[in-house]
Length: 78
Image (cartoon, rainbow, N blue to C red; front, side):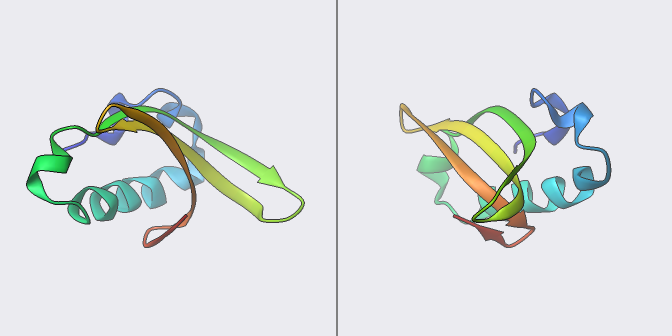
């Protein structure tokens, strides 16, 4: 299981920390057992952009590929 407190930038999330923990639980459980073994969180940070508004940027590696997601809620990411 992934531990949110160990991810770079988690300590700077403030009020978004609880939402990120819930997202991380849902994200992890959305994958099969084999893929879960390959998920390696890199960092998380709060960002804003004009098109999408505020979101958390979650950078991670999965199956040897670096990826990142817009996280807008515990069950909403893209």
